[in-house]
Image (cartoon, rainbow, N blue to C red):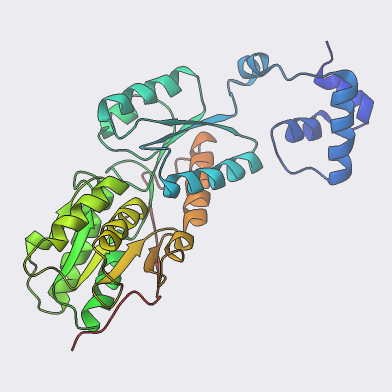
Length: 328
């Protein structure tokens, strides 16, 4: 069986260059072609088990998500894979289906694979449970005190979006938010409340609808808002799937946006352009989130604990379209 030394002799390149190629690192194109040809000619196979025993590293990172169906996480995951590849790491992705009991089981499953680090968007797991895994961990999208986290500025994001509605004359503004036990949802609700406070407006708690981060919740809670007497003049959805479900409900009621109701969505601008008119949307910097999560985890896996725990909070962008009408 061919070894990495055989590939080195065949190509005339160093073992370090070949190892970098095998781990997905950046290698000169000419060297890449020579190594690829040598691997095919010699029928070289990487012995991952032997490499792990020798280096005590599997060069693999686990990524644990609440759902694989949500475009937000799917798009970030695709970017994480590319950033990890540039550092020579592979990725294993799991979902716990928004089930806290399954969440800890999946974390222990990943730990059992002897992976080098974990990226997780947590729901119910505690800091103690994560620390007990004895594996470098960086949280994504959600934070837990005492642990490294990369999040967006949810409070400012929703504050600015609700403020946009307020300056257009809206006062009865509905909001559909995810489970408040999740820090992301709690912070977005807080952003809504702060916008009202800044304009000396009273919050009607009945206009804040709490559901899940899914299309069905967006649809159901939007109908609840539309059934109110009087209904809100504007609604803000706080995730991609909630946005889709809420607009489905509005269309089902034959409502026109913004003539009958104004609307602000969240995440993934392309889908909002499918609607007529395109929806004003809060965009999260998905590529920047992926890069920040990856680089922080790579540092931790390399033994750099400087600044731990680190909370990286990234800015969002409010992309204005034609879904907000003016009152008064």
